[in-house]
Length: 68
Image 1 (cartoon, rainbow, N blue to C red):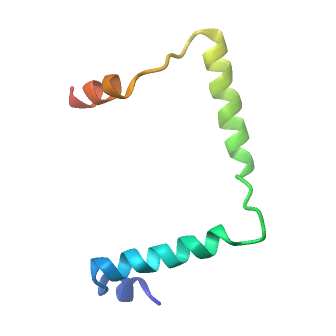
Image 2: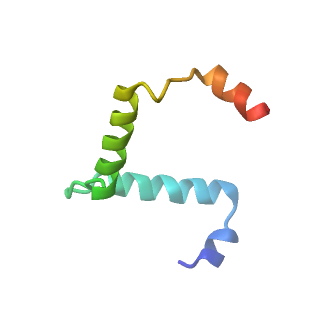
């Protein structure tokens, strides 16, 4: 199946195909591990939080920021 084939599918057909793909991934015996670079990002973010140079925002605060 090519990207062009997918574009020619109806919305319902694409959703059904996506569900089939997702189901096949969920039942894979091989565990998918995150890439190594994820650990580095998490380490840096943890350092930033621990140093006080970062803060948490509520969803409402994030929405307000995106409107400005």
